[in-house]
Amino acid sequence: MDGNLTFLHESCKTFHGELVNFEKMHKVAEMVRTIRRYRSSQLAMDTETSPPHLQTKAYVRQLQVIDNQNLLFDMSCKLEPKDT
Image 1 (tube, one colour):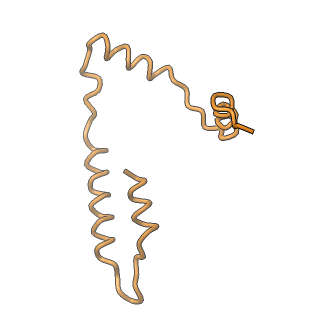
Image 2: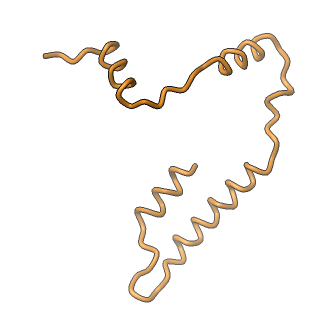
């Protein structure tokens, strides 16, 4: 959702000369309202107690995020070697 907001902000000018781009401002305000609505509501993910759901939650919790771009590139090259 914030990717859409970034795209909207970067792709359209806020001002055209001395005029304000009200269409852009309206879309930005709509997205901000949507984000606020989603952030203010509690997710009901913890109410499900079926075994497959619990297994999925346990699996997701044990995942580790890799944010090192060099490591990710090396891992990608191992899985899909470049043809030379």
